[in-house]
Image (cartoon, rainbow over all chains, first blue to last red; front, side, top):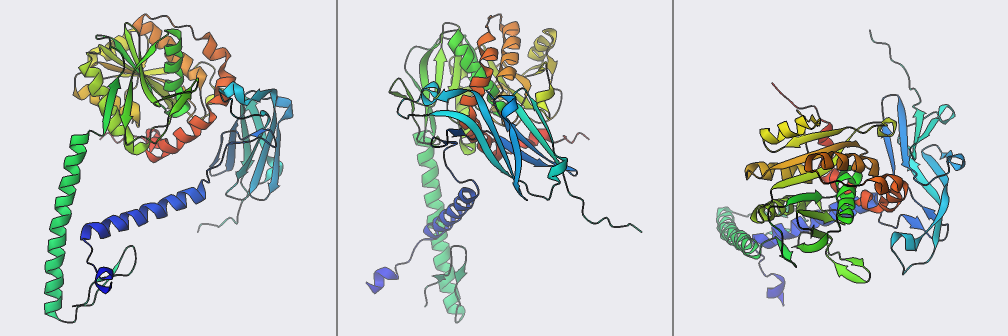
Length: 150
Length: 295
């Protein structure tokens, strides 16, 4: 028993273990960041649109792909200091069967996504534009303290 | 002598009491290192023998054909364009790609399972199409295999259609298509057809590798790259590349379905686009924005 516990492991085993540990750790970190879940919610009839947040020196730009959207229904709201919610209604309901999926039931009518805003912004000065099914939201960044250069 | 103890996944704790302990430990370490090298060689040999990527043919493959590549990339431009062409030319599945490097996925069509990366064919054209994002680590061996297979089937021209991500794509009304080629005479052909040549910069991803491997093997290849979104499906850009493809090859492809059904396609392609973007980020696709260093 004691001998088996003290059985010498090859350098290969140890390196392999080390690499496995490292890989698991990186996957866990990645998954924690990008939790895998469906991009739809059948209870709320919602589809999560493709979104992207980018930060420039002057503003934060949030872009959402909203195909098949009625432009008059788009709502953009700052739900808290660092979260922006985008909601929109589709021009017509989309059923699962239209995606070629017949083993699930339900239909989608809304788009909804929450976007993390990584820096402080002035939401009152927010500008939006909707063109070719793409929504662009521009939020000016809040200015910090200006330091005089001597 | 105390066994060297593994204190964590990364480090070792071993405190030799004297020189003899240290020498014994080092000799064992050398022995283990030798075994490690042997095992690596063994793995290498097994990898070579088992072939990491293979193309399984289901029907006879036409020779002297055009070969298109519809692989997931920015805006899914190539995928949407090639998928549309396959439908328009009523091409049938003639082969598929099998590899342990691909995720364990089958695509169901009418209840039947299919490989996600398949090759379609008609009398004068072949088209490789992937219905799932290709993992970044698998791109190199798979592209190499597709090019090797194309050469073995005496393909006369390899055509890759894809996108070049541009800022404020939504403000561009008429999408511009750029061209790249594997040799100077093909570049001239593109130029003569009115296609602007990509003179400098970087190409990253599956199409970059296809161009490189084709150039290495003297296999004629062109890339038609339309201005596109980076991470949103772009059927308009796909339609623009098909128009240029028609000009070059003389194959008349109607793109009205692709343009009119654009919004629905964008809705259906969301999940595929999301997974493709994740893989593109792993490939450092954004290096295409980098300014090249020409001294």
